[in-house]
Length: 260
Image (cartoon, rainbow, N blue to C red):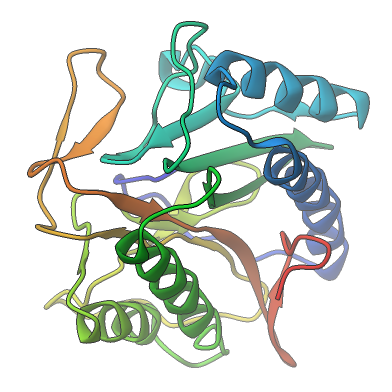
């Protein structure tokens, strides 16, 4: 779940990072389940039910349910929806859609958070390119999670890759630190800001989440108070991983089985 409020920065012990990895393995399991079962005609409410059941069956709580009043367990954002789409029994995905699913868990006092955008059947070449570039941008950002780097190094890696292909990064919503709170410091923008950014610290855990639009970077929030859409109604993709900074480099806590 994307954030946009600055909070204090915390670093985690090796034992705490291990718990967070367990929390994120449950998140990864949910997203893998949704990837496997995504099909035309599926309601977004059914996806939400699967996510919550899997989460609770594995001893965790869905992190988003009730968070600041969010009604679902899963954020499901389709096509021009960027993030924070609300599950509904009336909304069905269709062939050619791209569906961003963002899920979080709370497990043994710590949070996990990850997202993936899933194609429904065959999608357009433009959307294929959008998904590929967004996924690649995330990996380039992850590669900068090195002790002593700055958060802006992550932002730059994401922004430069996205803009090289003519797409834009959302500025209104950003990645974030994560730990005993869903949203901690530092903010992790997907674009380079003018002010100095914090150093990457050993034990810092951050959720990096490029939100990439085909057209303008501008977005707006619908009347439900949650669903974010692109201002020009063009498609958007969203990929996210929770990543720990270690002396040995970045450790991706939410990597899905078989993910390349």
